[in-house]
Length: 359
Image (tube, rainbow, N blue to C red; front, top):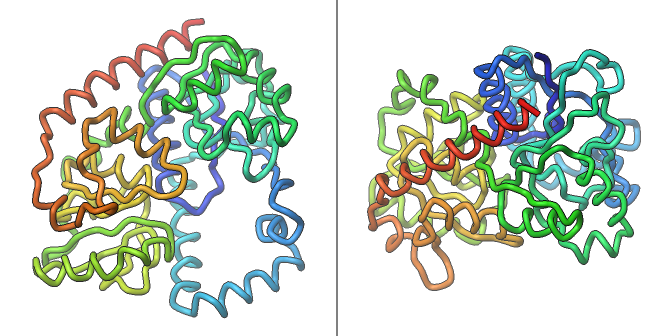
């Protein structure tokens, strides 16, 4: 069988590609050849100026010159190289297929994982199952991210969203908030499934990985420049414990080492670290599958990250709001408890996938 996957295949993000690659690997184990379908993403809700950043044209030149001016040559060159590394990874793994309207031989389409149902950039029909080249469409680990029911109504998108979800043969969601929204919009039951990175686990790939650095180090995993409020506390912890600060996958000016690496080899940096400090969903996910002690800072809309920490019983790993980094990282993680949750959720999620495929 041949399936298409509708997800964020063109983003500058290791976690997004890890989940796409993981889902493709799991589907392959079930006898299905799968790759991401290309489509045009809507940026209509961002405004014309920001929209130009994503739709590359002469209008984009000024935006990227300002980026260079504001962020410096080091970060600009890092992200230029990062783009080449991620594009090479996608090509090597054959992760991206044809444009969705040109695919006439698909047995089904999976929408997800990641924030495919978020509306903050604009209304993208493919994310909601509209106009896809097959009748068999279901979601796997989809997420609304920061989008709420109120936001959907404010944007006059309730019919657009609800009709798309209602026509799917199944709704597998990544967090309880997305389940509640989907059920309110459609009146249908949605199921909780785990992120494809946890479902696939990358155990085979990690089996022979060795620490990529001789010195002891800690990993900081956060979007470029998005951990400034915690930088001094992290540097103080690193000095006290004799650790280098390594930022793999994103650029932090204050880190000792910024590493450009493909998504799978990124796991080696997580696996070899003494600890991980993160404020992202996939930073927490990678810490879980690598069994590396983590400290997590919640930010903005924390629904999906807090839901993840609750599911895997690591809510006590949050720092900030009176909990110091030293205090959090001095406590051991009950990996037996975490891994029991991983096993149970993998089994439930694989069962969901098999039922959807069999329909």
